[in-house]
Amino acid sequence: MMTTDTQRPRPGAAILRTALRRNIGAMIAGTVLMGLYQAAETAFPIALGLIVEHTMQDRSLGSLGVSIGSLAVIITTVSLSWRFGMRVLQKANTTEAHRWRVQVAACGLQPVARDVDGLKSGEILTIATEDADQTADIIEVVPLLVSSLVAVVVAAVALSLADIRLGLLVIVGTVGILSILAVMSQRIGSSTQEQQAKVARAGAKVADLIIGLRPLHGFGGNHAAFGSYRRVSTDAKRQAITVARVNGAYAGTALALNAVLAAAVSLTAGWLAFEGRISIGELVMAVGLAQFIMEPLKMFSEMPKYVMIARASAERMALVLSAPPVTVPGSERPSPGGDLEVDGVRHGTLRGLKFSVTAGEFVAIAPYQPRAAADLVAVLAVNAAPPAYEGVVRLGGQELADLSVEAVREHLLVNPYDAEIFGGTLRTNIDPSGSSRTLPEAVEASMLTDVVALHRDGLDYAVRDRGANLSGGQRQRLSLARALAADTDVLVLHNPTTAVDAVTEQLIARNIAKLRRGRTTLVITSSPALLDAADRVLVLDEGVITAEDTHRNLLAGDEEYCLAVAR
Image 1: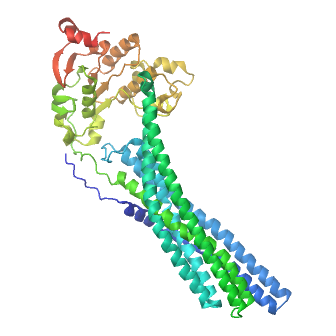
Image 2: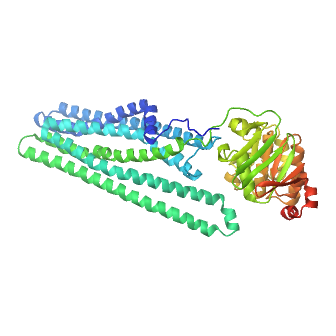
Image 3: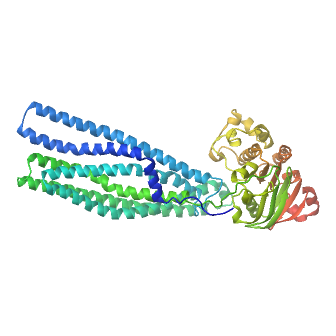
């Protein structure tokens, strides 16, 4: 296997460009409708000024009717263009956010892990939700920015027709306001990116706490863990306050500058009217536009902030989407049979580990150190990619490095002791694809029958997320049933019965041996029942195999083994 990244990098700017390109049609339609909305809004004070101007000259009912009709058309245009324009943009925004959420989630669910630079699952969850939503906001930001510019341009042109100085005042003032706010938006972008990272870390920490709450309570480590979360959460809170202050300063500055510009336009128009250089109707139009222009200017001035937030979120998504795979898998498939061979593997606490399991054999490994068992499971489950360790693992005579991940998953299933339980039913947890042909046998072999019989719905009994409505033993048996129902050529079980009583454990051991007869099975455990059911037992001590025999022979001749597995 090679570790060279063959995927084209996708930085934050490229993500934003992709989002814009995919929604160009919706953005054009939204821009036209929102531009029409802003133009109609701008036309309202212009129409009022014209109505005042002509009404003073021609005081007829016909002119009044035309004026009222014109205002009605303008108001209707404002209402409909806003409603349908925002509908188009929000639909595109929601759809694009969904696309990025799916893409980020797909990266996390790929069989080959990605080098995400230390990001935890909780952080990736934040990226797949909040950052995806904020990145997709660019779909609305650009049309709103263009439509606000339309309003400013229309207002400037209308005021220039009255007096060129009024138009120049709007243009110069708008450029000045945007220049000041563009500088401030840079601070918002960097502060927001830092806040998002700290909030994600806090989310990852609380996710870890929820998962490990029971063991933490067991050895009294809950207070220390909560203290650690409190520190991370406090850090995130302080950064959130900093971002709120920056946003507040930005909003306050934008509002003040917009008000100053509106006041300057109104005062200038009043002075020009007093000097007789513009008419009363033009004065009404200028004052109306000065008040109206506050809204598009406010929207226009806020857009750089949202652009920077979207850019910051896109950069965080790029951490996941552009992350190279930990390894590039091969394309071969294992030969039929189910042989499993570990040859000279050095990883973590493993020190040149070497053993083999022939096809159809039931072998147990008794680890004296739990860490060594975890390291072996990581290697067999391909959680530790071949380049991460020395030595070779062969499946069906083929090295794992040469096999496709799909082929490995099809022929080899490693069921960890802490396998996840999903929200759904007992049935969907045991057979997620609905294609298992051994589901009843798996339920019986794992001794899950009493859980099924306990509820009226049987296998359709609703299971909460993480199996919250099941006991520890029930969750473990449910996980074991799922592994057995998969009916793979090679099955590796890690401590599958630690949460069940001795009688149930004895029955499960016999059932596994019976159900898996003729299929390759490797159980990593210190359970006497499972060790006794195995064809042979390998003793794993200090990272190497130190003894090999049947469970009963080892009990009779190895005192250290007796102390390690006797209960």
